[in-house]
Image (cartoon, rainbow, N blue to C red; front, side, top):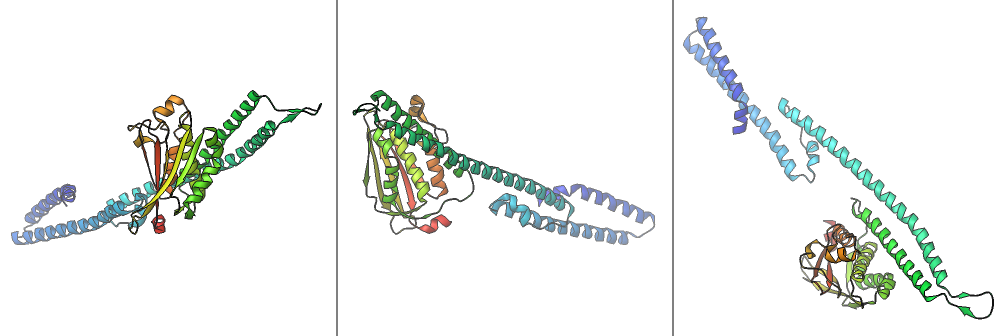
Length: 358
């Protein structure tokens, strides 16, 4: 109200000057003082009435505008929710708001199209890249087969050093495949599309499948998996969870001790019967661990920590994708560790399926 009255100050000054001028003219024309007072009183009442009506109209518009701006899920929708006012200043504000909203919405739509195009390109690229990689794996397997000489009956195996190089090359191809898979899920994680399907899955089956898919990597690093209390059903997307568990396994293998180690998969149900009932899966290893100062940042994009920087083995993307994909599926993820005492990641699966539709 005070701000509005201040904005009307000049109008009142002009009105007062006009009233004085009218009174002077009427007096010069010989009109009586009583009539002049009545005319001025009527003019004053009209001015007050106009001021009140203007304030009421403006207050209604701006109050509605403020309410929708505070409560709307997206402030850009405000212009579509308020009615066009009938006073000039409000029309200017409304038109400016419409123009800004349209420009912003067009920008958002363009960004969404670019993200969609980017994702489609990455998915196509991943599909195309996997074919030659699969062919390369097959060629390497053929090269590893014993080679028999055309002359004589005895066969010989390739030189042990050459076999070692072939195994190393195979491992590097696996790494390339891992990076390609990361690129695919990174593209999926950055889009607004809900391209996953939440269903009930056996937690034991999910973990067992992930262990089998990464068995060669664990065997090469002498890392042994153990499973405990996994007989739960959880709501998740099986393909996304396979990728998440694969990233956790690869992370544990990457930072395992030189003489090998272990990865422990364990689960428990918490707050049974309550609204926040959940099943927590913990994936823990006995590797080099992470310092207490680095733990809060392990899920940050590009963060590698002291161990990752010293060994130059980390891209800082794996755990970021774990957290990002869990967030998109409505799962909570946390980490705990201490230097030299291993690293553990816990994923919480809500037991109430309606949680995923909020």
